[in-house]
Length: 373
Image (cartoon, rainbow, N blue to C red; front, side, top):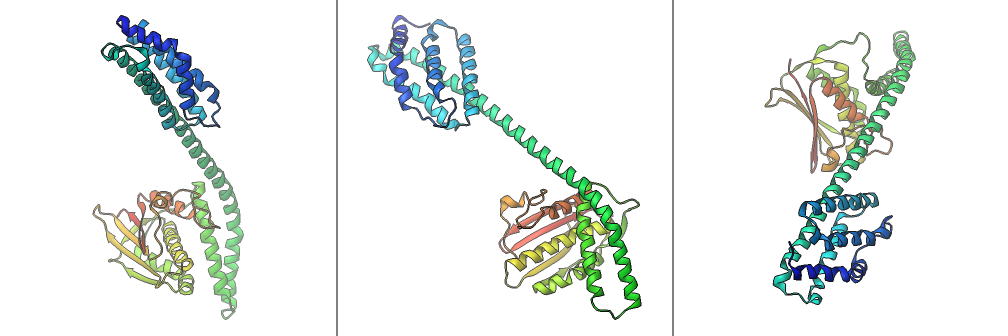
């Protein structure tokens, strides 16, 4: 309980409330875009009213009143989207103004100590309740926005998958016919120029549309996993990309261990290698790197998985981008779809493996981990 003189201090503050509120209002930081700026004075008066009546209430009653007021004010602060630091600063200004007027009360320090402790108690609890609720409300907003973004991403992928699945299945029929007629032409006119180039371009086109087929989450009817040799597959990829390698003057260094046998969808794993190697060629070509080089290594990692590393000496990928390059629709290319590495990651995960990226100065490495059979 307060003594008579301590109660006199509260009475003094109460009698000078208008002056204290005005002084507080003049000192606070106010964002002109704050939709609740006209309520700041009202909120300040409400807090002072609690303080000036605290000698009439128990601590439990004070806590309940302070928590209710703090939640109401923090809700406004969340909707106003203000800096929480400004809010804490403004509240503590009120405490400072009360202290600066203590000398005018005429009460001795020893008598006012308990009253000051109660003022601190009220301010501290009010800030605790307000900041805690503010943080919880902000986190809830962030979670809701994240869920919305994730849902939007998923909706886009689902729609794209449905569109591409329908388009590709219809597109492949005439493409297969054209490829068949090319083979017939080769048989009838073995010396006809450009047939090999046309056939190669059709293979590239078939490969590109196969990427989008994966987005549908459907697999071709009758498609089965097979055993295939890793080194042979890598050689096929390099032969397939040879025109691009030659045109970009990229040096290929292979350091492959004794051949590994893999089990899975060979065409999909081939697609992963083509994507990663072609991306490396594209980066080296566009950044005009001196002595452009791509290294392909295979080994057994400490966990007993087959590790295939594809490195290039192009520019570093910033650390913040290394975390997002496997996400759908992320791309740094002007005309990129942002699906290449996402598809690669989907394929490797389907094969119970992992795909990682590590980038330092002058060396970026994509590592593929696949289980041994």
